[in-house]
Image (cartoon, rainbow, N blue to C red):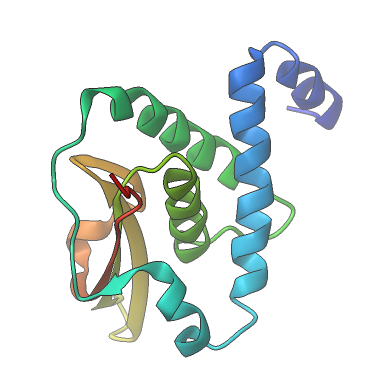
Length: 152
């Protein structure tokens, strides 16, 4: 699909979806910028180390979670920079946090077909996987970060 057609397609979305896509684009860029720093520097902002949030969601959180899944998946595939699994997970976590929805970011490792070590990140909120779920079963969790966004 050429650029003009993609641009025109944006105007077919309702304002809420357009806002969510814009938010996703900005936070994907912010997350990409964060990765310029050492992981030890950004890790404290990812949440409580070695903890997980509940695997259940409140009914009122389900629709926002689904909008975020769609935005991260759609926009993440069209950024001018490479939006890797960690970038998508961090951006999704921030989008959930802004809506006061808990999430857990997982970091895992595995070996590729050549025996080289590879890493992956994925994000879960309640029973929903925001990003990275497609290959997460191939990885062993080495760390997790719980972001408890609610203060009530």
